[in-house]
Structures are given as structure tokens and as C-alpha cells.
Image (cartoon, rainbow, N blue to C red; front, side, top):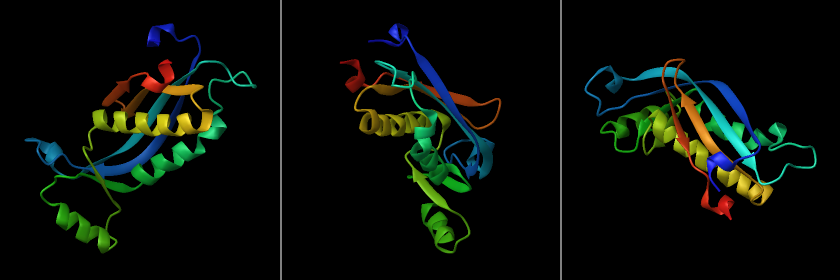
Amino acid sequence: MNIHSIKFSCSKSYEDFPCSHRQWRHQGHCRFVHGYSRSFTFWFTAKKLDHNGFVVDFSSLKPLENRLKEQFDHTFLINKDDPLLNYWEKLHDLDALDLRIMDNVGMEFTSELIWRWANEYLQDKDKGRTCCWKTESKENKSNKASFEEIPDWFKS
């Protein structure tokens, strides 16, 4: 199965997750702490529609939305190898910021991360009937990245 053989698809967007981050290796201004209101879009497909005729019942995605809120709503995202990590952890302990440590805080990695979250949830919930085949992460209306792949377990 490839993306072009998909018959039914739907998408769900979640918007306005204000958070801050920094890319400490960047030579320009991205090395400084800065923030955006992140938004996310998920594209879903199904081997067959459910009893309502849906690919995915959007009302069933609350656990995914809650996971996005937990990770990105009023949080400070930092790469796990940030040389200031000890300082960020101290500020977290002082309740000055809500720290989330990631492999990489960039939009590309974030798109892959939320793709994995969606597919973990769907595989458990729908037992392989549905999958998320694409995600998009936006830090503002100009900057976005996506990740696209059909999970191996869905192909069979």
C-alpha cells in the first residue's frame, strides 16, 4: 500500500499551543529562547470506514489532543544535549518554566514525533483499521514541516 492508493482520507488540525524553545547549535538568532504558537495537522486513512462512515471519529482523538497539550501548551522545549540543560532543569524546579526535553525541538522532528504518537494511539484503538500517514507542524503561518509515511503494520 502506498499513499497514492488511499481511497479515503481525512485530516484534523489542532491550533494555538504557545511554547518556547531554542536551537542552541544555530549560529543565528534561533540560538536564543523564543516562542511561537504551534499548530498541528494530522492526515488519516482507513482500510475500511467505521460504522458511521468515518475514517476517524474526531471525537475519539481527545487523548491525542491531550498529549499535544501536555507537550506543547505553555511549555519550554529544549534539546536533550543543550549545554544549559542543568540551568533549565533548575528553573523548572523553581517553577519558572515548564520544561520538556526532546531529542530535537525543530518542526521536522516534531512532525515525526506526533506521527508516532498518532499511530501508537490508532493502532491500539482501531487494531490496525486506521493510521496516520502524514503530519504537519507549524510554528507560525510561514514556517512548517511535515512527516509522511504509512506505518509498516498498516500495509499488511
